[in-house]
Length: 83
Length: 203
Image 1: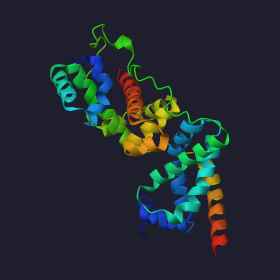
Image 2: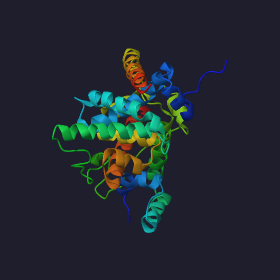
Image 3: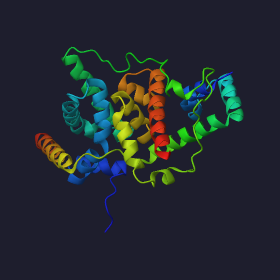
């Protein structure tokens, strides 16, 4: 029988539907009986879905400007060598 | 006039090959954070930025031969990983990613549970059903970014590649040289940390 602590350990496996049959059965049985773990699973799923909506943090504008100028130079130098 | 859509990968690659400044601006803005996480995971923070510079040179050199078998971002992250590993080899350092991962470490503090393993301090119901509702809360987006920032580099890498960029776990394992079981443990620990931060925010 899985405990609530066990459920919190394997929650991501549960979300990604990658459990062997008997483990999945035990997992589902526990969730059917335990409101607290259902809350936990719903909230972990919401957390993951929220992360998928976030864009990665963008670097500072000055960093982007500097980097772009350096990459453009490299690209143009390479094109010149090729032609 | 139609605006250029750099999120269209074929268009983006075509523009990069033509040295379109805005295309470079797009990739630097959108890829840098993930590149930094991968580099930091493999070589550590001190030389991660140098590794990124080396990787960009390789990306520009190899771009005409890019075959599109993965997304451009995945391909770029693989190049960062290769640059980082080459750098480690040059410095005769071992690749340390994925070492010393203690799979027994709990993802939540023990004091949340009673001795029998059932909840002592159980999660409360959230009156929020969607990511949009969650993100509409003032300060929550910043809190999530800050929490990701506080994670160990390997967890930052895995959660950003898996949950934000949508890479397959098998691809992430190859990029970071981590076993599938370890990467799953690390991903779950990172998710649990973010869940705890959101839970605290709700109180």
